[in-house]
Image (spheres, one colour):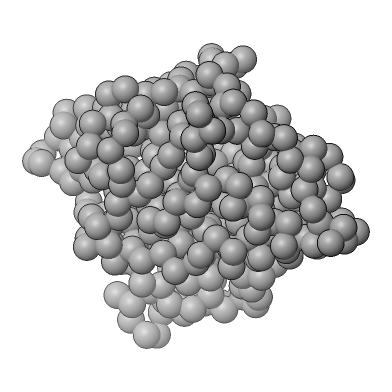
Amino acid sequence: METNVLKQFIGLLTPSSLLHRKVQVLGVCRPPPAFSPETHFLVFSLRLFPASFLLLLPSGRLHRRETPQPAEYRLFGPSASRPELGGQGTELGPTPVEVGVHGSGHGAAGFVGTHVAMALKNRGDGVVGLDNFNNYYETGLKKARKSLLERRGVYIIEGDINDAALLGKLFEIVHFTHVMHLAAQAGVRYAMQNPNSYIHSNVNGFVSLLEACKNANPQPSIVWASSSSVYGLNSKVPFSEKDRTDQPASLYAATKKAGEEIAHTYNHIYGLSITGLRFFTVYGPWGRPDMAYYFFTKDILRGKEIKIFEGADHATVARDFTYIDDVVEGCLAALDTAKKSTGSGGKKKGAAQLRIYNLGNTSPVPVGKLVSILEKLLKIKAKKKFLPMPRNGDVLFTHANISLARKELGYKPTTDLETGLKKFVKWYLSYYGAKKKSTW
């Protein structure tokens, strides 16, 4: 976003200037709990060239002042939406998070970001996101998420998290109290051909965001996506947050481990409240096309051969597949329990919260079983080819110990793999208009 556009945006945000500009009033919503019952909020859609924002302002402040006062905004990010989540109408309802919570989200048109955004929207939070719409996988899917999102009043800024000027201006404009960081270059195998993209996004991008948060006054609390891949070559299962994470099996894992160490540093020096979430093989509607369950479905429907990898001596490859709705519940719980940062303008004033949690399903399933479930749901026999696992950084087995998340976040996954895949297949067939040809 150009600097002059941002300056215009700053002007748009003052209550007095809103009276002199054409804005679209979308509706009225009930206030957060700490506001008086008489206070209502107006929902404004402000369109600025390629960017759109959703702002909720107390209607009582929308009057002329000789000296404009800062508006109260409620923004939460990341991204798009899905049809089955609902979210119709303009009355947003009460929100369980504290007053003054403004959130920034990064990875806005991504898979997890999409679902987290709509969950926040559905419970009454306004949503704004940031995404660079890279071409790691089909951009059409991201654009479709974005379109669904906008129809429900959730908007995305197209920009790069490494754009320090953009982040600086955004944090200058709105005093965020929470940041949900889900932007990353994903995928274990892709790192073999494109290592620099992982450093650029997962390390440099994270530092860029933390710098913006560090310099903010007040500093926001941060929740971000780490990965189960940090457990690397560990053979002891299930994986616990107390286990070693110093032997990554892939560059992707190494960048996520680096992120955890960087988070520790910014927490220690600058007083940033930071919570990391180690996701375990997240799947579901609007998922990533590079994930096995997704491209297996595609290839089975097309009658193409699918490759199933095995370990040495035909050892089973298994994953702790975790349904997206369960992961979303963990993300919201992490946001709602995040304590305030203790720094201000880059200066630490006391010890700050630093947390890390596993978000998994605790029930590893062999990849062969995954294929069997898809065959059953699609009513098509898969053409399978079993191959040795290539040396690309993948590991044989993942299994989450979620005792800590259950105790401190109330995290409790409820979706088994067959139930989750049934929902995914229903979405896939609807989205792509695919036709099943039974071979059973």
